[in-house]
Image 1 (cartoon, helix red, strand yellow):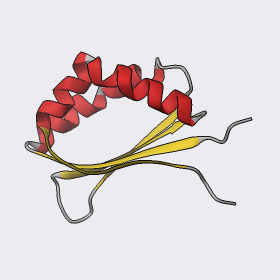
Image 2: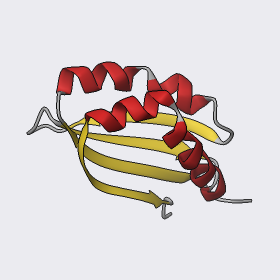
Image 3: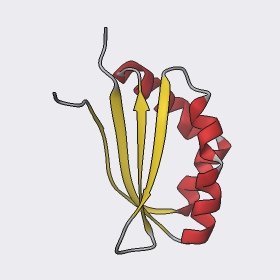
Image 4: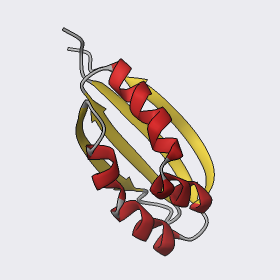
Length: 96
């Protein structure tokens, strides 16, 4: 059995209000992908233009498959249009 995988993305946006509108519609897109478990959204405590998304997947294979499909989705493309810079993107597993 594979371990759950957390995809963590930190990024800055051009227009925070517009990016948040786009972002609010993404859960329905993400949750439709096989292996989706949950999604948590964070905003920086020091910059209104920086966000962090944490998506939990049932496996690395699911995360990677969803990533490819997600990038082709119009909602994802709308978010990418609002993205100024991706600071970090990684897949991690919890250590116990």
